[in-house]
Length: 154
Image (tube, rainbow, N blue to C red; front, side, top):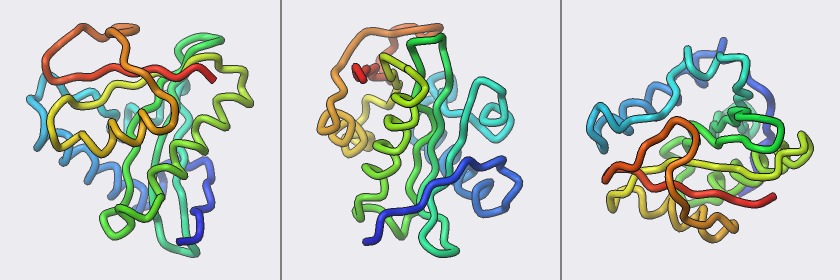
């Protein structure tokens, strides 16, 4: 597959909003309500968050965001690949784009929280293959059986 073209997205388009809604529904289906930390549209519009959408021609392929924590730390949020593009490398391309943008901003560490269940295994494997390592809870998170925390030195 041709790599997606990424652009900063203001979430005014229906395709991006629909993929965020699909992501949120999936997170709520796979994790208890109190353990879903994905950002909805309102959360993604926070000034500390940059949201990207990845496109192939006029088709939305993937989304992902970076939330600034401080000058050296940022958190990857709300990564999702459209169902028809799963397994095509779109997730890896999205992650690499976000990490590249973080590096340009002078971020030293990228952090993330993902699920601990089997359903999240492909995501964890992707993160590990891109240099993330397991760590403890960071920021405002607390350890819980439904979350896995990871970080990547950029």
